[in-house]
Image (tube, rainbow, N blue to C red; front, side):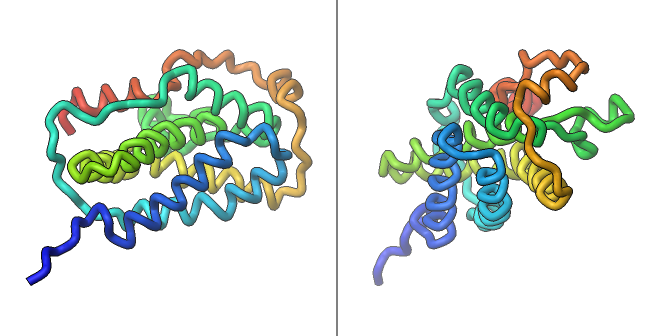
Length: 207
């Protein structure tokens, strides 16, 4: 009897990997596009990314020490800034479903660029681990990606889709990042935007 193939080579994982690679390609070359072009790309790509991530198999990790990380804070900042400059006045939105909402009892300022950088970090780390070709490493890459999709960036993806939909059909034109900054007086501290900090908190809570 032939051995059952590993779930890391299943159709659902392969298809997610393809969509994830497409997302990372656009994120890394965002500066080569116009803002309205990127919004339309994200309008089509994000729902597909969400669908494929939701179909990833439920696996158990092989290793206890956690997966190796490749995307650092400088990479995150570069992707975030690239989207921020590209999307300009389309970037800001009020996030109702943020976990901080229960504390503030008011919508929390958020941005598409931050969300895209968060999603990019997790997905890029997944891709680089998956490309090793080592079954155990690939398994844990799929396991962690699904876990983080459920608990971290899946909601950010959905929130961004809502904001993108609203802006595209508002009929507004995208203003420059400078115009956006002139209208942004909330003085947000960006020191905690790097998603790795949230992943550490998540792991330390033992959830």
